Image (cartoon, rainbow, N blue to C red):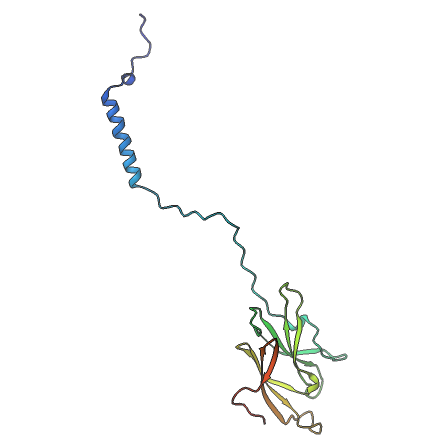
Length: 191
């Protein structure tokens, strides 16, 4: 018989001690792995992809709409503008006080409510609270708590000069049942 060039390997023959050592090592690995468990999985359930947050609603800009003022060759002046959600739909409306740019005197104001549709189209006038033909000048103008408040200075008769309004009314408009309802705020009086 010829001798192998490779010496006999010691583990080529299995003995009970080998089986015992293998079983002990396997038991130790199982024990250690059960003690070192990772945290419970928190995988999300498959479903639709998250939707991005809707863009914040932008209040309409009065310079982007043709206000119903007949100013001829002079420009329209937006004297005041305030924004707020007046109808409770979650989108802001803008209330603009505007008049024709007169070189002399006190031109009458118009008060207009502007909105923008959900498709972000150009703003549009949805209500006229004060017409310029009413010959009123607007002061102390505010939009708060879903309402519009203002002082309206006007004239008791056509004989009163345009320079000197002699009547003041404190008014409030509130959106109710699909329209702006005008009222007089509590505690105010006409002069």
